[in-house]
Length: 170
Image 1 (cartoon, rainbow, N blue to C red):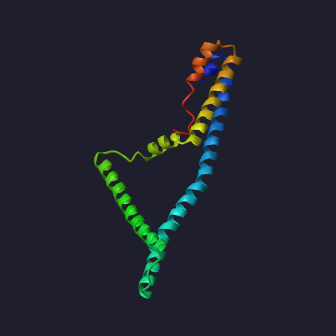
Image 2: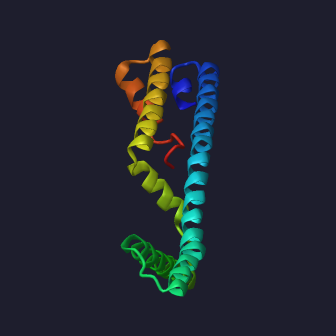
Image 3: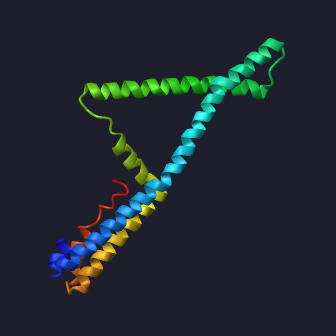
């Protein structure tokens, strides 16, 4: 809006801003929608492994114990890793609960959303998306300002003020 006002075309600037915001919201929706399926598959895969390690492997172990046969090395490794997985998940859940309790005692909320946002900015795919959204915003704003006759230094200063609000990593 400030860019349109400075360029002498507030109505055109607001229309461009509306279009840009709608395009960004559409992109953010598409990115979130595209991440739902992989997240579901990941959770389902972890659940399957946990069920196998908690239900199937102990029954296999009991079967070998009943028959008196020595278990193959691969089976012993699988049973050991299953027990380690159960212990690791239990310890991880206990640690997370303790951390949440300690933060609650200090009067703070879990900063999960901020952590996920910061982590997503470190992933190359999201970094590229954020950079592309920022470049598109800068280009659109700069084009509007230069098209309305603003000098390049002033146009660059105003266009730079639009950076950092892509919504993808925030």
